[in-house]
Length: 243
Image (spheres, rainbow, N blue to C red):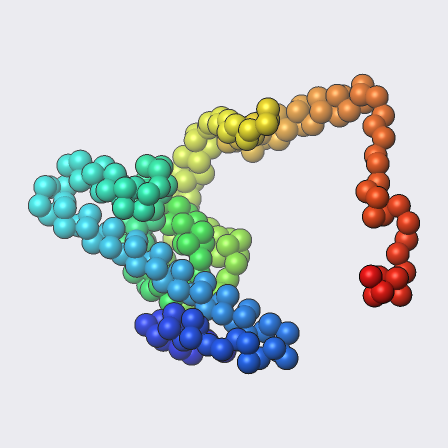
């Protein structure tokens, strides 16, 4: 319903629509509104990225390439958005990656792909030369609108390999070298453990942990599961309506 409304007028159109007048459509118009808000979110994210890359270029012109301009900008973005430095750094990397892929950036700004997908495209293309980035941009942009994260990622990987197999190999080696372990307390005496590393090592660690967890379950006494009171007796349709 809102697909053909320009982004500049979309928010006003969605917020001003009388959804209560269309009760017979089973909420279809509200789903249209959800899709329209998603377009707005993506456009805003692309707009932030464009401002960050433009600011970086201006700062580098003033302070010189190789200065601490990028670190300063990451800190300012973190404060402006009230997010962590790591989140601001990730957005900075996205912004600079999209600056080298202007046609893909246009698709993002029009709502054709999500920020998650745009980040994946930038990561996969990270080791290409400027010349190959231009080629990738022209090949990819007309084909990615509406694709899921997985399909878009698979497509860009194939294109990167065709353009520069060595760059694809470098990307794999860089990602495999990025090994880390993080722990996040969840409260109430539990925590979440996150591990990143080569797939075969993570698979082996997972299998060892899974075997350990199964061993714990096998030594515990059987637990009795109590059904909630409202499930103790079957409730017929007539009694439900009467209630």
